[in-house]
Length: 434
Image 1 (tube, rainbow, N blue to C red):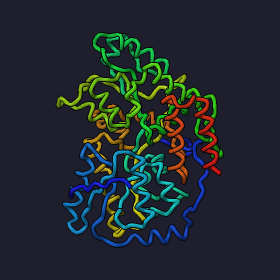
Image 2 (cartoon, rainbow, N blue to C red):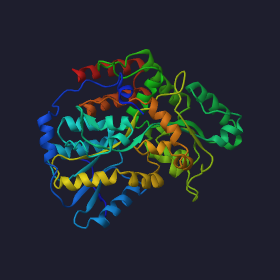
Image 3 (cartoon, rainbow, N blue to C red):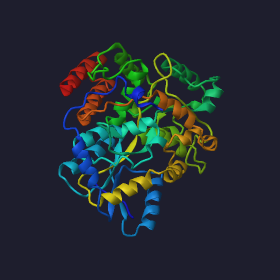
Image 4 (cartoon, one colour):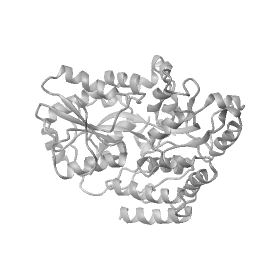
């Protein structure tokens, strides 16, 4: 069915969560509430799928397959804005007014705890998903208060995309492991005549969720963490200072181009794809577009992937990805559950991998030699996932990410010193933590 636009008003769970989870507060779902919610997964009929845009068209193809087989249970796609913060705001507002307009919600993994704690989504039955076949970290990211509230849809870890053709021409034989390596490689590449007009490096630095991710990764890659093991904010530290200084210096000395201050994922992807960058930090999904041989990519066959660099050794990715959940106020929840099971099943995951490069949540894909031969970034992604750290699983995530963005953005735009930005961020996060 036609999409409708609305404007906005392995990997072990224990290792991934260590030192990063903020103590959860607010209304947690009790066991009696969970049982009741599961019993309410009834009703069949039309539903909506509420998601960010998908330029690959892969998700729509899955929906078309479902709709062809379910004439009385059609799925309509309600497309959210591209900006992640606007997505979360629109989803939260719909829940707060108790509207039944949304059925199946496509959630950033870090929103799942917030939505579960506020009872904006309902628990899934224990046997709803083949959890033993899924990467454990993805199941953990879909779980709140020991209860599965969502289905892992795809997983994500950061990758460093590199212009291997230019690195080779400049005599650089290995991708950068550290930030110093990255700068040194750029110095050599940008001295080449064929690199005239190019810039060194970009990530996602617009003031939205991508900035939180990039800052979190930089802190972890400098040996720090945003929160202590007992859930207290811990950002006014030498490690966080080194991380933020790397970003600030990058903009100041031109390592990061000035225009990257507006980059979200797609702007960065387009800049690298057009041949304007030597290095780009981004997610696996862009691999397909970069590899296109229809003339749309200037870097097809000329790039490689590696783990992101860090301060003194290979960097640490943020755990990304998406979950699918059932809105608490939705009608036809039985259809919604069956659609989620279909949409996140191995057959549809494989089809979307072909079209979109979205990383599957089934561990078997990463072990299949035929699959990894076709998608050579998967082993590198697995390394990224094995070392990844999650963003804090916090009920007040919207407020938490907003203050991180405000203070980091103030520093990289020169409105605050690194020291003042981190001191203010520490204070604001402590106020939120209570």
